[in-house]
Amino acid sequence: MTAAATVLETSISDLQLVKRGKVRDVYSVDDEHFLIVATDRISAFDCVLPTPIARKGEVLTQLSRFWFERLKSITPHHLVTARIEEMPESVRRHKEILGGRSMLARRTEVFPVECVVRGYLVGSGWKDYKRTGEVCGHKLPTGLRESDQLLEPIFTPATKAEEGHDENISEEQMRDIIGDEATNTLRDISLRLYSEASSYARSRGIIIADTKFEFGRDRDGKIILIDEALTPDSSRFWPADEYEPGRSQPSFDKQYVRDYLESLDWDKKPPAPPLPPEVAEATTARYLEAYRLLMGESV
Ligand SMILES: Nc1ncnc2c1ncn2[C@@H]1O[C@H](COP(=O)(O)OP(=O)(O)OP(=O)(O)O)[C@@H](O)[C@H]1O
Ligand SMILES: [Mg+2]
Image (spheres, rainbow, N blue to C red):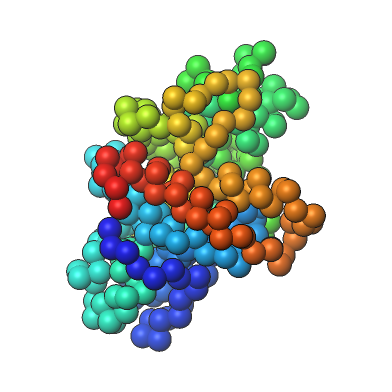
């Protein structure tokens, strides 16, 4: 990975901005391709913070690249290249800003559902279970504790809300939104991706408690994996040696950030407050550590 300057927002004069997500700036390169730029923005409680997290964009892009390649026998994906040298001149010209953090990707029509797989009971899954004994229509045994491993990973889709929180839905509700055939395909691929990735991660000391995939249809109507894959932003990564069910787990993501924000008198509505340098630095260190463990090399 190449060290680049910290980037909170991009504005690339040669390319047309299609969308600014919470983390990514998406540009149109041509009819068939997007440039997806992971910035160093971080969001917490669905608000984007004003403080960048150095190296984060690079970690997200390089980890996704690694997983797309590793999992390509399970599903085709949208990544054409993450090497800036292989991108069009209009992109290469902005190497300083874009290098290391950008993916040239096939553009797709995105399925409006988040394909979540859970191997452990945590987050909204744990909340739903405590209330109803079920998660997204999966009836679970009684007496499970927070962070317990499930007997089998479960597919727990959610709506992709334009604004605000995504909402957990059942597989039946997903069928109403995108149809039977696409639902079956997305579910089966998601479960296989999780199974393969979580056993690899486990061998490197990381538990992938849950994760979220996105899929789209390419120009030929083929279903492909898009967006980011198996990063600390789209997944819960836990250090395996500290795993202990019955409580919340330390994780490789925004824990410091959330803990810090919880200590403030902030109502969790925009604008979000800035982070002190030591919180931002500790967060960078967590992202780099997740990368190092998974990839077996430092950045
Ligand atoms: N190959 C692709 N084709 C079309 N859209 C894509 C592709 N890959 C990713 N996207 C979209 O690009 C955006 C990436 O931006 P980012 O991850 O920052 O958004 P987000 O804030 O997480 O999500 P959203 O804005 O969708 O709620 C997402 O909306 C994602 O669905
Ligand atoms: Mg996203």
